[in-house]
Length: 464
Image 1 (cartoon, rainbow, N blue to C red):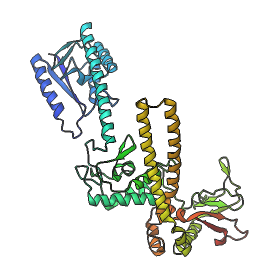
Image 2: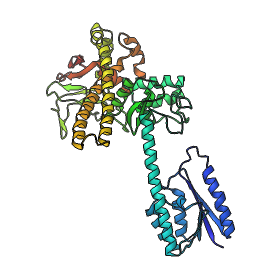
Image 3: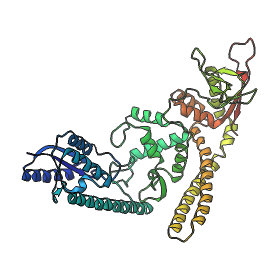
Image 4: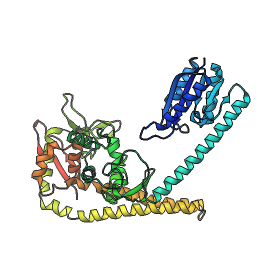
């Protein structure tokens, strides 16, 4: 009696109901029974396409079992359940030929793979299936582009954080958290510290899983939470659902989180004033470099990759405490209040820049349509696109420079509150607060013979 393998596959089953593959298995078992074959094993790849690059583990296992001589026949519901790529079909032929397998039974009709005509038929059906798959992919892609352009809802799976199951209605308790997270990132908090805080507070994702930086970053950079439709990472217009934050906030979040200088997947920095100290002798930026005994220190480094003079160094602990005290004191001064009085204009300017970015993106889309309709030539398209891209790049840089001011929200004129919370703030937030007020600190040389902390060595240069 022939030992048969049953292979079942379905391309899409996002809810993992397995109804489609179960129907295939029932029909294949009945076919094997009619032929008098013993079902040696069933192989099921659920929710996996045969036309993409995603690996089909059960299919590969079946091939390995065929190579090992454990199977004599293969039963499938239809030939396109096995293959939609001619390359895979040829590999299948090579393996079954080497194993001496001649029996391939399908519910829709058998194939005699022992003859050239049988293999030709399989190749033709495989080519037809590949062509149909390609056409289906094009139709789906075009449909998604149309839905995106219209701002319509698409897709299934888990609901978005901040919205109800209909994916259109805002969920108030989660929307409050989304606003909080956006404000914290704009204020300088790191994604790592925010994820840790959410987990400690018992705030879970929509699936109940702990927060991961990639999940948080993807949510905050999406146009969805500001009522915008994005497609392949680009915002294409307003959506049919309401926003939780403003489009201007999304533009700022994208500028901050998309900055290539942003640190990712590295250990947290332990130096509050990294990059903010200048040597009084040569003007070079001091670098963080611990002493042999492990004490944190900043030095004016000299050598390969460093342009310093190696004549200035300072221990970090007392100096950072001094600068923090100066920052806290300055929070309550009229000078800072006067400087931040211009901040409303900055906010208005940030909104204007965000609007300009959206307008330029819309113009790029319009330009692409004109080129696609042959209304303009390729040279004209490239020339116009270059100018728009230059404006987008310049405005993104401007927006990036404006985002740091949120770090002082709630603390101006209220240094006591910041002092109370300082030790609990993540290092990234502390750095953002300091950077919002301090441009840099000039570090002078230590006096010979004096081995205690000397505050006079440090001259803060404040932001204007």
